[in-house]
Length: 150
Image (cartoon, rainbow, N blue to C red; front, side, top):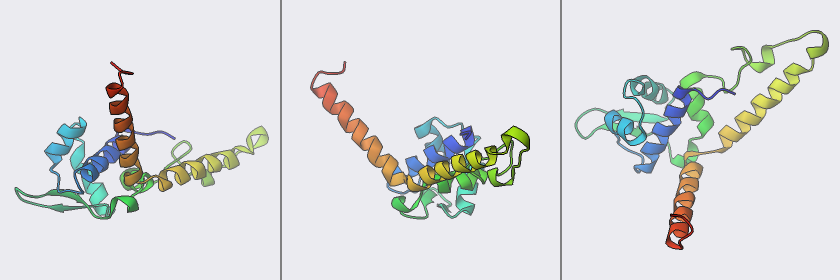
């Protein structure tokens, strides 16, 4: 599986909005918070809005907000919203690939890779990632307080 900049930026943007209490967060703030080039964000945010993962409100107090609760938005949802399929073989879905000769078993492998990837990404939510981040920050803080890190 190839994780493109578009995938990465979309997940980062969704996490930043989730960490901000669900929004609203302005595009310029998302770019600054996550170090995402502002030129990438409009089309990514539009895809996320079309997928009904985000809602938007214009105006000075507007911005982008989560359209669902954080425990109901998976990384798989986000990645599909910005690019379609989660895994492909030479740009095609794994189930459409056929081989001859010694490679006839490969479609099964590619389909298993796709299924495993989908299972992992679909079972990982924004809430999971925010909890993991909080746990890591707490662990780093505790280690620093104990003098284990400098």
